[in-house]
Image (cartoon, rainbow, N blue to C red; front, side, top):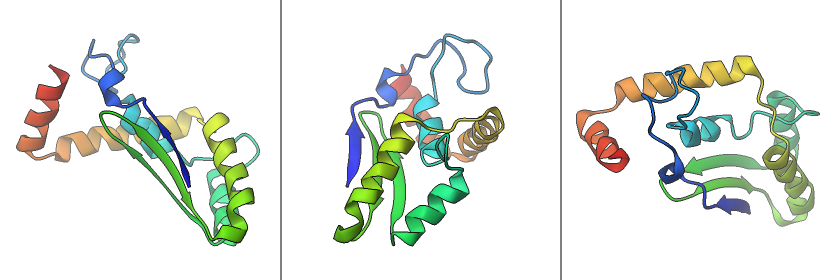
Length: 129
């Protein structure tokens, strides 16, 4: 089960060069950044505790972002759906987003951008335009 939201990267503003830029009115790259931070814990559970709890339920989690939508997903066996839904609601409604983790993930996004092949960069540029 999961949560699908119509908040894809098409809604990001293009007022700067993206995440690495300090211009405060740009949101370029935030969708992908949130994908990387999706299961980083809650105020009561660290990322490790969240993952350990999910593992004890026999579950796995993933997040996916696109131009149109954002998906949080947890896969568990049917008897464990209720406690897993509690975990998903906590991580979506009350994510733990500490400054250190956010800065680390910003660097990851920057490195991913540098490693993109030219055809992908061109496609991204056309979408932004």
